[in-house]
Length: 148
Image (cartoon, rainbow, N blue to C red; front, side, top):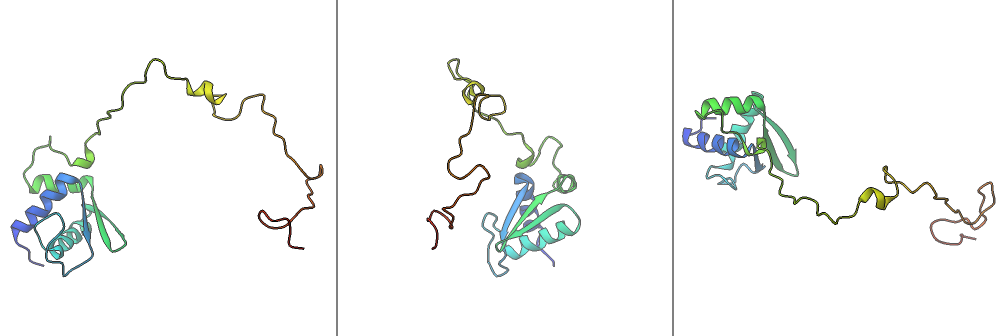
């Protein structure tokens, strides 16, 4: 399918910037949700990239999800004339903004009673009802007392 180069560059730029692209399976949709390009153009460009191994495709509930591969990053970087320093958003390391633990915080391992998180060494379970061989007369299904 012949597409305008302007549309191809817009789709490739968005794909490289985010690292992923999503599109509803609707070939008659006049415009893609995030890019000012017909939805059919996006779908066909991604089909072309998928056949060359530059994107990985997942389809669920009438939506396409395309993920850029390492080969796809190299191809788009060459096609869009981008330097090596620019990487897709999915390849950037996330900045953790969790604060350090306060000095007066409780020790979780001591709270749980053991390093593995199980009950302490002095735990003795108590099972009620029934004989020693495990037989119980009250029977039935669920919480009821029986069906007799």
